[in-house]
Length: 317
Image 1 (cartoon, rainbow, N blue to C red):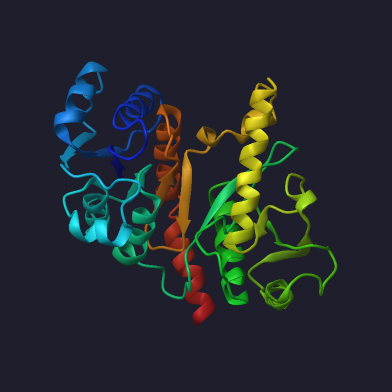
Image 2 (tube, rainbow, N blue to C red):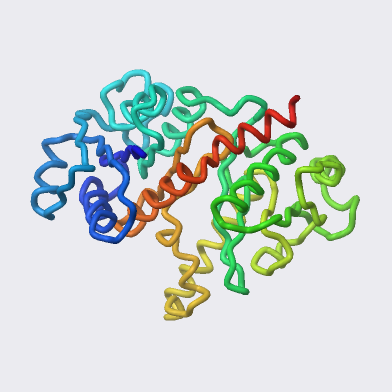
């Protein structure tokens, strides 16, 4: 398998990306072929300095970088020699099987939508975040910011995409899906929630358990929690603040609170596009890069995108 890595994405690029490669290659992982995409005048000296060398490592020169504040569509069009643009070209042409970056999130999403394209039948791709549960398991919340305004049909698909991720990546058999709402009873919520509930209830491809409330997120009621991106992003930022507070109060070493750290999960996959695309946090360090590579590897070996395409072909048949 071939995994592309944007070496220039992130606040600490390319150093932390190089250190992430070092961690990955020095561990007992089944090594993938890694295509490091970045400015070779900056990346190669760091690879040499940290002793990062492998027959599975390939450096692809990309002299341009898309900055965080650049317009995503315009930057991708004008900076064809940027690490993100080259990464998506390699992914679209089959030279690599997955692409990861901690760079410009907008550019990554635009590239995923227009270079790789959604799986046929998917109305809108979604992004989710891992939720650590008190019982030691993990769940997924989707959408967390890609789709601020949604229709009921979108949430219905998010539930299916999230369920497939929970099954094949998180290892949860028959994952329980639930709709985020202001009450557990059917008929609760705003117009979107009220219209989404019957779609989820009638969806035979889901193990739908009904509504859950905000207080249920960290419990074991549901494995897949579905909402619009506006709501999900607020929940995500609140969860991040919980970890920040725990760290400030010297509680971050607690086994549960430590599981909130983003580095443990690497990055956020774009669900519903034809090939694995993983977006990392802008402040990603070596551990996050290593875990992004491992997540990409797992998505490839499980053929998650293929399974999603198969399921949606059944839905639209």
